[in-house]
Image (cartoon, rainbow, N blue to C red; front, side, top):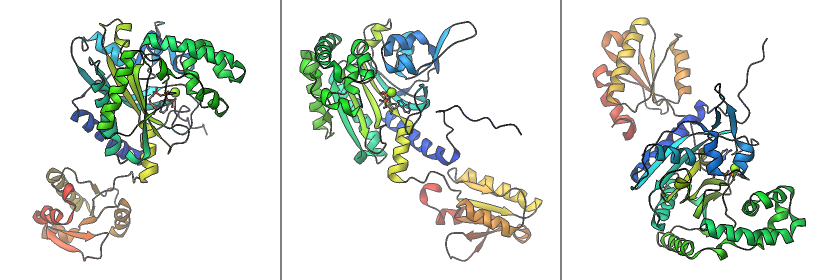
Length: 429
Ligand code: ATP
Ligand code: MG
């Protein structure tokens, strides 16, 4: 016997028992994004490697060790997208979407990073992202954060997430702060772990983001970025906090929040949960005012966020113990070719009348007793039975599968009215 081939490590199948929950979340995200005037953009999964090197930054975890990069048959250097912003900005410039206008865009899809797979961290994962182009003022930051808050609230996750915000300042302020930080860390070099030793020269701000418990005291005493902000960033951050407070959005300022990508300026934020162990960030984003120009577009302020879909789904399953599989509403049984044929007709008429109804028509033969077992397992509330006698009388027997109410016989024409009376309203509207 040959060994069955298995999926690539860290790349998951999303099984039928879970897809309904995914669809529910996806629909809800789309609804909220549309209610704020965002339009969807669909982007390629593969981009030129150069795009990610230039935007995310050479000295970041993603570019250093997480990208799926390959040469195609023509020796072009390509990469499976590890995040969405770079491609979105690339497309925006390429199609002239960003110049002299406010653009609100969203997208959803698969992303790829070569990481160590664990709960909430995979090699193929999904993000839903939102990006706003063309607004430099902090009102846009506030609105974007409010949008993300609405998503958590609508999913019933409000009580399980915390908003953290920080400001990374202008590029100049950040490089000034970087000097102070490197001075401080160099004087304590013996306390740095191996990763941080390396980052001291390549990306010292990332040291603040270290999860190593042994490093936490050193980090807590480090100079704070917020003490080195330029005046404009300081005011921007203060105004944003003011808006958030007045909108009753709870948040904490986390001076160690630096984000793993180089392109951020001013505002950065994360929605964090305690429900998922080490993979606590469910949504992350911020402002990236320099990126459009850096990629060759006209200078355009911009900001955005990305939600990690797997983490969101995990949270919902954990917190709400969400039942994920949809039930059939009706199980339709017949016992001959002629009654089956009639059954098809009746099922189709019901689908025309009630598009939201799930009707499972029995196929594969077998006696009615057996079919009743299947009907029970399907979760349906009603079995509709058409046997020879019903066929002759132009009626259907309707059995209540979850209640003790006695079985009823109704004429074919009356079946829709019967269901309207007995099924939940949203199914038969
Ligand atoms: P982390 O610190 O957890 O590695 P990150 O800073 O690398 O996250 P971002 O690049 O900001 O993550 O991506 C935005 C969101 O996408 C994250 O907050 C997370 O919810 C999700 N995400 C990132 N990487 C993965 C992954 N490998 N598997 C599943 N979800 C992920
Ligand atoms: Mg990461």
